[in-house]
Every structure is written in structure tokens, then in C-alpha cells.
Length: 275
Image 1: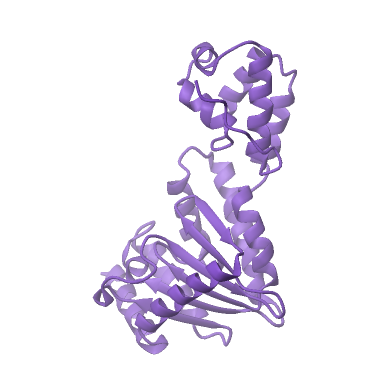
Image 2 (image 1 turned 135 degrees about the vertical axis):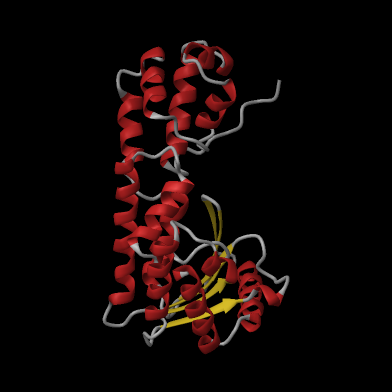
């Protein structure tokens, strides 16, 4: 049997939870399969909890707390995790985002959070995290809207966004939500700090296929890159690797429509949603 994977409790709150859960399970003399059988859930779920890759639902966590004699420690830790509106992998990126003086983004699947309407953000979060309660989704929506204050500063950062054409074509939330969202994007494009491009289907394959890409630039610090796909993100700080991702963005930027042609295409999409 292979040795258990080493865990870093400092990596994230879910990782800390996983370390605690493994210690309690080991102390109780239970295997993952035995503990899963007592709940009951698949033992593979217990493994995911212990690796910090998944946080158990509230009812499962309560059973774990009782079964392992945690005396409320797991309940308290779970509550702390759930009170945090952003996952650990996103928080460090947002710390960088708040300091950036330029953001260059290729968005593969959705409008960037900094330009989303409440209705559009709500639908994305509801669909992407179907296990969340209405209250949890609303908390995340509020946190996302608060992030948009970055663009209302006296000296806001440059935001240059390349939207894949699928972003303006897919009816997230229905026609009304999409019309409102596309109108918001067009309005944002009139701001001196925002540039919008669309990467049309006609451009064919491109260097950023597979997920969204952000390159953040700073007044004196080196650039960083952020890769995002689904509900996971990777922050890249190594200068050589960041340079590669910046080159990928430049290629996508070169394939995009001009800002003027992009706005015209978005306006056309809005009319199609009105029909």
C-alpha cells in the first residue's frame, strides 16, 4: 500500500481541514472506507476531503465531527471555510489584481467578473456551483460586485479584454440577462481605461485554447499570469513562464477584431437576443 500523500496545512483552509480530518480518523483507528461506511458516503469522498480538494456538505461534516469525537472542531472549521466568499486559489490572484496597473485578459467562456452584471454573475455562480444554497450564491455575487470597485478608482487600471465569440453568443440566464450583460460590456468599452475585443469563430484555432488567461502588470514589480479553467486557477509568478503566457496573449490579441468591429459584433448579438 502506498504511503499517504503528504499534506500542507498552510496551503489553504480546505487543506487545513483535510489535515485535521486525517488526524482524527487515524486516531480513531478507522480507514477511509470504514469511515465512509459509517456516514455513509463513498470512501473516495473521504480521500478528497483529506486532500483538501473538496469540502464536505454541512450534514456530512456534522456526522464526521460526531463520529470522530472532534468536539465541534470540524464544525467550527467548516463554518470558517464557508464564510470565506473566495477559494484560496483565487485570493492571492485578487491581491495582485488590486495592485495591478494593467490587466490583459483572454476570456474563453464568460465575461470577466469585473464587467459582469448581478444577474449574469448570479447565473454563472448558480450553474457552476449547484451545491451552494441561495444565500451562499448571493454572498458570492455581492463579493464579485465589490471587486468591480477597482474600475471606479480615481486612477483605475487598464483593462484590455479579448472575449471569445462564444462568450457573446451563449445565452447565459436567457435573452434578457444577456442583453443587459452585453449592454454593460458595450458601455464599459466607452471608458478610457477599458478596451474590448472579440476573437471571432472565423479566427479558427489560437494559442489560448483550453481556458482563460490573465496577465497582470505593475508599476515596478514583474508581471504575473493567471490561468483559469472551470473552478480552479493557477497563479504563475516565474518570469520565464509568465513571458510565455504573455506571448500567448499577444497572439490572441492580434487575431481579435478591432475594438470598433468588436463593439459592432456585440451590438449585433444583442439584437439577436431581442428576437
